[in-house]
Length: 182
Image (cartoon, rainbow, N blue to C red; front, side, top):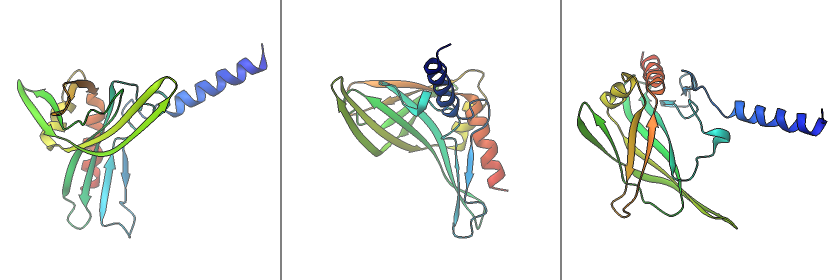
């Protein structure tokens, strides 16, 4: 076999495996728990299931959960849903929606990061948004048999994008939050 082919195949397999995160129930990080210089603990499912090579495809979103916990009292300060998106134009996402027991849940979202990257093939507009979620929302997602579809909407643009949150990610996140609050 050609050595170049083997090298390229090995590199593709390595980068693919390295970027997959812990999609089967792992990859939730707990940071600051033993750090004397931190006054809070951060729990994040950012690495739970990452897109191939960490690149969010155009017209899609990559969601993850984050929690901040007060170290002195062991109580949750906030639970958040982050979504990283790429689109062909600015979308100004300001709301996430999903169905919870037949009721439409609306989560206000705020843009915390943006970037544009243009090449000869067009432009990609990256927007990172975050919203505060209730523990009941994450618990509901964790209890489902199938991934929960969430829709990002914008009051400024007539488009939307749907993405899914796997129950396994919500379960692993809640378990990590439980460990961090004990």
